[in-house]
Image (tube, rainbow, N blue to C red; front, side, top):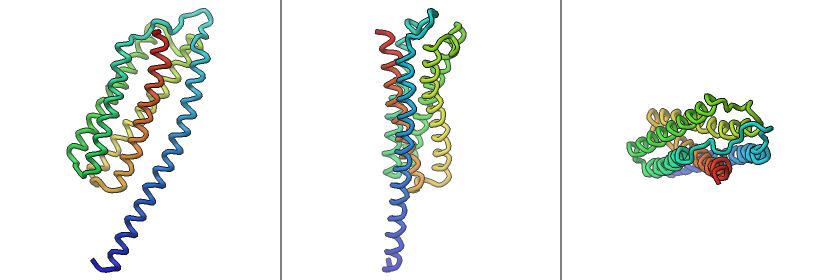
Length: 202
């Protein structure tokens, strides 16, 4: 490799590294803003969870085995996504896609269970308008669910780009940022599981 080619190569690598760091920093800022959003929703739920106005409370309405199954689906999806990142780093395209597809299916299953829970509550007459407690519950859990759906759409788009363009540095950056988002949703769900469901069952 000539000196000019080597300089150009190192310059390109430096540019890609700068772009990766810039994108990652920007995404961390977004994650922090989302933390503020969910913190506000958690505080609202904590304040309103007993505000029933003499109507139905949240006590005894949730099936802990069902919610635990939901939780295991999302935690497992975080593990499979982590494996996909490792395979992408090593340039192993087929195992990477296998883990991404597994993550996508686990995420879809989680959303399916969440829709079922909401449908079950609504068909039994418990809606966001029932009282302040139900309103705060549907808002908190529903906001998390919308984030998961957004993550699934994003994952699908990234998989399409990976299939077309391969494991390029730009696509690896997208995978990494999506991974931050997906793991963040796991952390939020653990908080939801603990504060909304577990404390309610104790």
